[in-house]
Length: 132
Image (cartoon, rainbow, N blue to C red; front, side, top):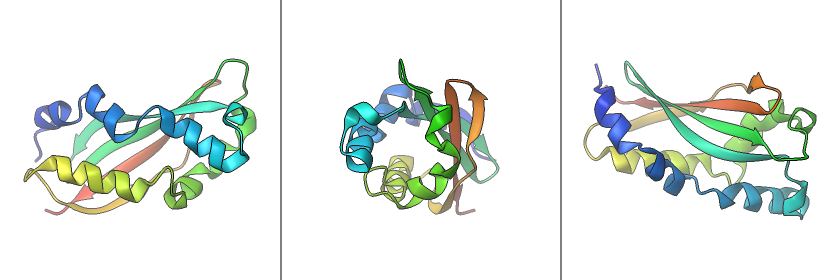
């Protein structure tokens, strides 16, 4: 069983902001639409916890003022995020693995389906599986 308290310290909010900087949302929309202003939401990374040999994170999509997140087809995003070079989930997972510093080694990862938390917040689960 993994020690969640240690992971809470490793993946503190300021560390998560370094792993997935706030400006990555703007870069993503600039690449996608050629215009940052077209972006309907901001993307942030949150650490949820650990279970068995799995670290649970989520990408939180928060609607921008005056925009419509529900109109943004967020349900197709897990597949887009898996491949998009700016979102770079593979690189993100590698960076998370490097932070583990001996308390685990990444075996695999998976993005879950988009979940609608509210009208202005959607989330995409990111599970990172560690070698046992």
